[in-house]
Image (cartoon, rainbow, N blue to C red; front, side, top):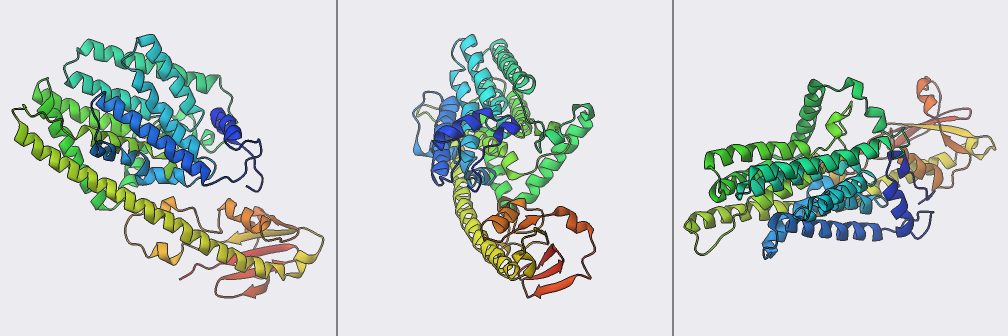
Length: 454
């Protein structure tokens, strides 16, 4: 809000840049939240409805069916996207345009391929973390077709045409569409270092992070749903049951790997939660694939009813956990914002009394340490993902918090200077010290040493 600029073109997100001007009704981007979050939520609702259509087809949908797709937008990783005041609608849009092309998969091949091409290009120019969604859906729907008796040749043709349209769109994005070239992702790309070993190491890092982010209860519920996914496929298949079980395992593994999109190809894995929300789509697909269809004339009616009951218990439990977590996350953001603002105001008050700030000369400042997380957040036992979702606290390398200190408190002639860290400030004058921070000064230089709250 302070500067109102758009800089998404630096990441090749030209669709985001263009749409942001329309959403904000200006080239200067004001803070219009919660409108952006409302738009993001509506877009995710549309994406969920289309995902149901892609997987379920024209079958009559129930309220329980809609519960299956709740993880698409409420599984913790995507919650991070909702909290972005400016980016959230376009992050959600990247999910929608990745799902929408699959709604045309039964149409003529040229039309479908064009839909995949356009959808992939729109995804790349909105938010590239959704890069794995189209391949995931193609593999998943191809498996459903094969399981239901579709000819293998036709299924393979569908996969090949989908892959061709997707790859062509990705190449157009990489080779033709301009990029800034100095984004944090560009800095991690070096195809000369690409190897199978490197990709495997990146995947190991992703799965290790995923494992450390959540308590065992999340994995236990997902495991139950996953078992039901395999059971349903074996019970309903028109193919050999052993073959179906094996193919189900391959499909499950492939869509899990694809959920990370193209990020495993980077020199270093991008581990921010907003880069891992492909797992939300994976969870939603497994939920959709674990609920058996029941007919009154079915010879295995009793067995299917049992598996359906177990599936729905797991899905409803997981969805409720997502809802509870989303409420916790919202309150955690509010608590951290309040705590950060209090600590920033304490620093600003003390800095305002320094004689050097009242001179006309510029004063250079550097902050060491952070204020840490609010007590209410630190005291919550369990999921590490909550701390990863909450923005970094004031101080340290959090450049955004510097902007708030330097711009919102009326401190004159003050600028951030990273080079001060290279100096030995231990013998500087201590201008102020309390239980929150210590302020060192030397001429036109100031270093604030923050203390974490207890």
